[in-house]
Length: 322
Image (cartoon, rainbow, N blue to C red; front, side):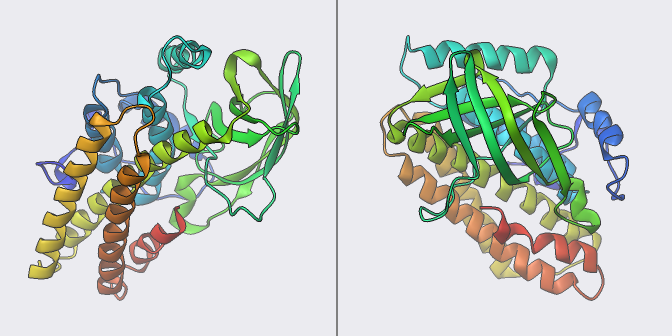
């Protein structure tokens, strides 16, 4: 949601990936890497967001599932750039090194950072070793699982601490499971990822004995996820209204204006946020924006169900992304 409507924003090279079966996805995804800026860099979080939204929104206007997949790479990459960290701490140097390697090698990063209910066991457990962190377990839902180079996540240590890791998905002891979604949604490439004795080197792991900082960082990351997820759905909604000639009701016009205000307010808060500030206030705004995008998605899905069932079904997945 920028001054331009999302469907006016075209990805670099005018690239489009038509809906297709999951087979051969990895080969086609290489076209995305070649034609788009998947590693936006800017001084202000709001500027990084604008660049990421241009890319993901431009794709989502024509192919929502792939746009969602790109969000799963872009939101952790963008959040990692801008999350406030203590100066001169080891985490700052490790982040700088990892970001430099991601940009220089144009790696794709996936994320398995969904917050689970407190009464559910962790999906993956971590054991601290002299040379790194051993991982065991399964993340059930990871988008871009078969094309991502690294997976970012946090896992509880068996001694009570928490490890934030960047795991090499091509490394030993790592395997991807079958696709979780069928039909056009398979283009999000969402799969389970299994770890069995995989070791993340110390250079790509941050260890803390306190859960508070990790929870703060997880909330910050979730803000990026909700903002970009709302963006790609609104881009697709705008395109579907044009393609199918849906009426522009007054209520929808008001809703879009309100969401524009919410998005601008969230980005201002994002630019002003400092380490230790109340990130939950920002998170509430981002959740509200995603919720309102969900309402528009539901209404649009109902309108196009008789004439475009696949697109209607795709819009219905928004409540699942938390």
